[in-house]
Length: 139
Image (cartoon, rainbow, N blue to C red; front, side, top):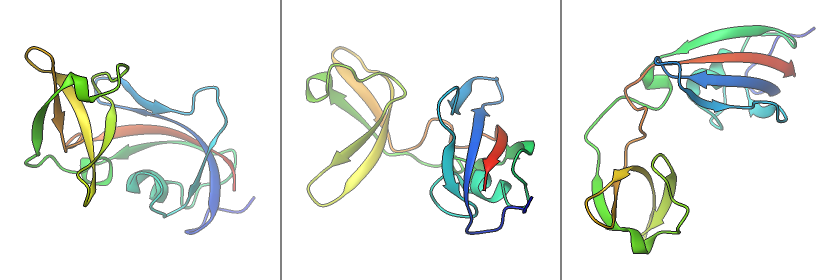
């Protein structure tokens, strides 16, 4: 079996967890996720972590905050009326918001006072190391 090299397309099963063991993302029982080894289509630490692995191999990757969701920094925060959002929006959802000139990714961080949502430009897990349990299914 050939080792995964940078640029290879690789099918992986994974489960990413926070330090408190909360599952952040997972392929679960669904199909494997196809990524580019060393590419930019997933977290840096995940795409680079598969390099050198072989099909069928499993590993646990500890990914530093910088290579996961980034370091914590000053975030742009806004309070927006709920009436401007679809009814199914929940805390933790990521939203693409356009001002006409640019599209910004914002996260719903909490229910605001009254009928508002509190949004942040910073991913909720920025500044946190994560652990990824990964299996290379095919390369």
